[in-house]
Length: 508
Ligand code: PHE
Image (cartoon, rainbow, N blue to C red; front, side, top):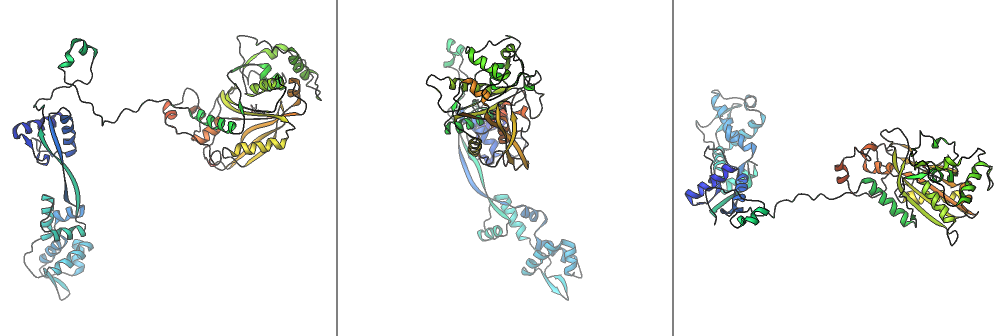
């Protein structure tokens, strides 16, 4: 580009203007692309060393077929040559064998029309000794001048698809106010030193190019999980739920297990399944000592119509700190507060979406932490039918309409149901959630009135997100291997009819 710029400048210097850059040739004879010239003109014009105007014109160019005719002669001329060379004349079959069927067909017709050849005793013979290949000459004129003087013939060539119109761009160039044959290096930045020394007054700065494409601004982006979380939050808010404060990852065993009537020997409370916190060692116990005692009693001796688990309940077990294994620890705490609200119990609907932790071996679909979407509804006389009906409404809002329920077991709910949805991509029923009616052994020690039933359910946020975003390895979604580009470039999400049903990828 630098040599092109100086070619333009020296040409301007000697000729004082360039009427048309089409005539500009490089010293070594190579053809110059007008687009390249335009680039050079642009940067010189920005320095006010020259001004230029566009010259647009329509040029006729040869099609590939016409290029062939120009090189090898028109079909009729080729046919004539072959006929002339055969002293005895030749049959159509012979002609076809020599020049090909297509050339023979087209060329013969025109050669007859031009009276160059005739038929004699079933053979083709010449009528003249010499012919002039007019078509070839016409194509040559088009090629060289970009036009043809005879407009009728030109129109005919166009109809035969031998020539086509092409727009071409070139430039006329004049000297600018700062014309010079040497290109001065321009400063791009005004520095503190230039201002201090005053040298900026004499410095030539590069002009701003306001048409340049800007650098894309590095904006923040929500993680796909957070986008899907937002969708779930909106569904909950739409259905009249309040959000529970989940801002504690570390929880006491009391709120994570004991208050939920999870026996102290339950496998979930094993180190294999739960992360225990070493330091500090104990959580202390809730201030409500009577509640703590009622929880201990219901485990050990039963009560509220239950015979309990009948094992020696250990207080130090309840104090152990854990990374919460589910957000049901939060729900439990909120239900306790609801039972003991100053104005007495009032029906309520709560939800939460946050992280939970499980000591699992990590693979493509499991991490040691994930997000749980959880909801609880507390009201008088709720039934299993209410739970099923509610689940259908809730999941329909995210486009999942075909649900099945399967009896399951949770220590804290009875009955309990796993929720399945038919995945048309995987062609099987996939589990999408866990639910149930909380047990009286959990609710009544809190002080909830007898007729109050609480339904609850939980699902992972990761599974619908992976399905929605077509991610089949959870480690690409969460954790240190996640690519920032993936997060930045993903679109907003709308839970729609396709979610969980038509997505094909095998999810969590
Ligand atoms: N805590 C359950 C889980 O971790 C989900 C659940 C919440 C089930 C509430 C029933 C009621 O899978």
